[in-house]
Length: 234
Image (cartoon, rainbow, N blue to C red; front, side):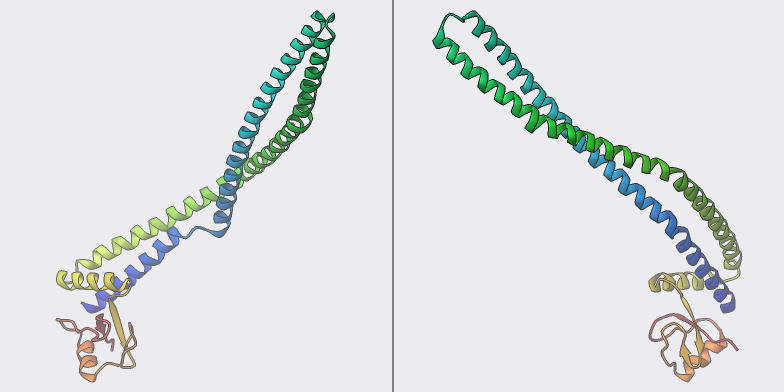
């Protein structure tokens, strides 16, 4: 019965190995996923910057239109009051101030904003192109990984079927005990006695324990150090 338990453990360890492989993402796929995430984040950042830039442009253009409207009104008022030299001087000063502010908005505010907008749009186009060119390769690797996982899961199901068949030949109490030990140790619940030592923790075992382990009778004998079920094959 303990030989069958060893076989079950071998199957369990193989199922564990397969489970690790299922969740182990291939490096080339992982690298492309990271690249896509970085490009997605870059695109989001650029879109936010471009949105902020557009708001600034809209605000500056509205301010420019307001000053241009004020300038046009001032010039109209100046023409209507051409007979008054004092008013002419006042209008000249106002027109000069408005013209300076308009030039400032056009040259120092809007021109850099327009340039920044073109720069952001170029960066956005390049990032979008990179993302688009990456997509086919990523899709191919994702499909290959899905097939790999499907094959591994099929292998898992086959091993689980073998385990269920073997489980029927083992005492339920013993199987439950093995399962609890295996869960606690996160791996093997049974250890072979090799060279007088526990194969699980390498502790040197007393001769009496070795003899009981070699008998392979119930109740099972456990390692006094790690608590694993001991089996000594002859």
